Image 1 (cartoon, rainbow, N blue to C red):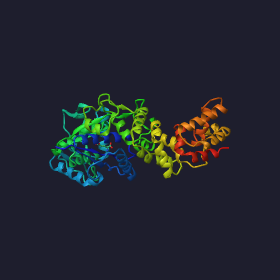
Image 2 (image 1 turned 90 degrees about the vertical axis):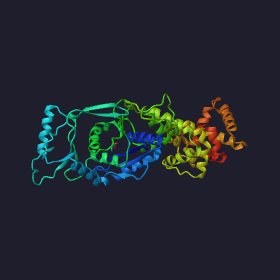
Image 3 (image 1 turned 180 degrees about the vertical axis):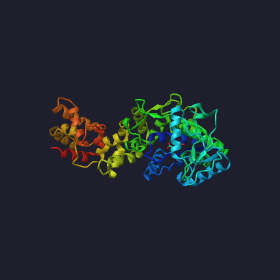
Image 4 (image 1 turned 180 degrees about the horizontal axis):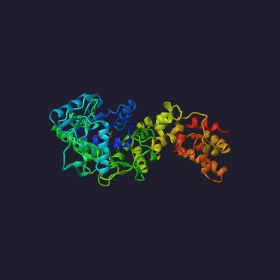
Length: 461
Ligand code: GLU
């Protein structure tokens, strides 16, 4: 039987990093087994639904390169099918109508609370021969097992047992005929042929209830793997307080998708001590046996280091294409010449930058035109007297190379600054880049070209 996994996010917010990791694991597992990952939108909560949240999830999956098979399914669109299944269970005696009034339910809840019991519904209408009250629209409840225990053999959590006393005859169809979430998930997973349910462990409790529906319908229960939560560095549930939690935010901060994939893979799964794992390798290695049982802590510094690694590995032309939008976000128009210079300087830029954002900060000067804007530190370093003499020296250089530029700087340093090269190189950097942080100024000057360098120097007075 071929493996079918699924990613069924609820579009109630921007795509979260936890959803991204769940998607990655489902995708890797499916890829490993040459199976499929299907994509279903759990959009039944119409009050919280918004199309931009669906777009955010699609964008996030696309950015991470996680492909899905078949069309995107809408759970909301399948509500008639969910109701149909509830009616089948009514017919087979596995479910029943319940006509309880809100006050009755409230009283049951109070009683259960007083007795310290988790389940509250007293099964009043199960096997009841009472005539239904007139004018009351009933809900449909499923017959949960009475007595004994239920077991889930989870691939991550191991054997998990609950006492059936904790499981109510829960509602599967509301009085307005709409399906509950619990029913919809099971019907969809079954109809989609899902073989493996890999999801957050906040759904573990639902699993016992969902299995009651599988059993009532005589359907095969899927294999379950419940992933522990992602925590912040301090051990509390990962939240905005710790930093970015949305996938798009990481894209906007200039992380590469392959770095994010690698980082998320390791956030809860391991293969020996391997840290850098290519996607191809991950597909080959990924299994559920090595998913960690304890929650992972998000480590922002580690993500940055992983990203730095992938930046160094990335193709230079691709990096140019990726960094240009970050530079343009600063209000700098990048033309062909700017792109050429970025490409020429890319070996150095990519070795320095941990993110595309940092690369944009350090490489934007290639794309600027005179007069440059200077940041405060650069302004403080501009030394017009030094720069004027430097310009004269450069003007005489026949070969404009890093070596000849450096040697001209050394001469000026010896003449004017007691031999301190930094006192010449720093003003030059400030004049050429508008900042005080950049790749080697001698290399940068060559990439800018003699004419442009002289142009930039001539603006300083
Ligand atoms: N829609 C649920 C969520 O976003 C997932 C449910 C499931 O995986 O069964 O948390």
